[in-house]
Length: 341
Image 1 (cartoon, helix red, strand yellow):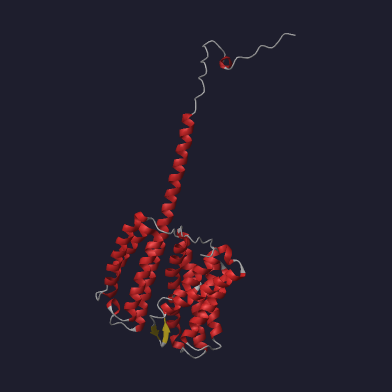
Image 2 (cartoon, one colour):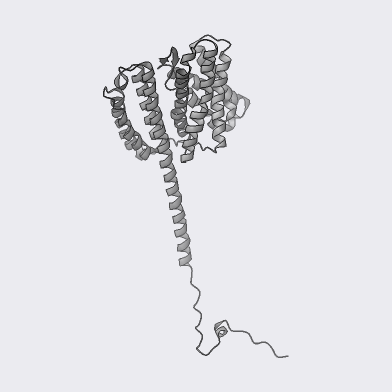
């Protein structure tokens, strides 16, 4: 595998840009497999390329932005023929993740998501705030080119914004954790991970496809995954749940049967958003508490070692007690008599 120092060379940088573009385009094709029509416009409940773009900029640096632009251009070509307004879509799709990363850097964001403030920054700055750019630019272009009626602006804008934000909330943390994960994982946890996977494969389809709306069953599963495997476990469960819930919503089955398209989108986005927030913030809190406990334990261990060394050293000899009639200074060390002159 090519190291980061090799990517600084011109050839390595080109490979990096092409790799980002290929991954962006690949996940865009996956995201377009499940689409909803809201007010006559096609939207995706989750747009994974935004999560890939933010993660790539955080891992490789802001210099990989041409890969995002190229991947976005290929995704637009897959949907329609190239036109002049494509430049506006490219601008919005590139500027939104770049602004997200700039805001995160200003907030001193850590890619290990080991603090609650990192989770809050990713939610409110990287997802909810920065993705206003792409949704506003995209839907605004549709309105200006007469592809969207004015009365449908806010419904489509909301669906676009939430879809981009969900891509950041679900995909970006998972990619950051996979980038920092140790491979292979510890063997002693394979049994526990397998049991959690089997449990997720049993609960999540039941919650998504049950006609009596059992979506709430996934929350204990996400809490368990966060407690045992922190961010990686909770976000993998959130990704599986989001994918199956999106499939059920686009097929109008299970908990989404009998609803209109707008109601399906509203219910799906509310569920996905609440689930992703729960998984991300709970995992950040648990990781922060574990790191704090580990730091306290290490400090206590170092203090115990210092005390052990101090008690192991020889104590100074006891000083003789002064007699009752001697002055107080007589108990000090004997003074050498001065010579007579």
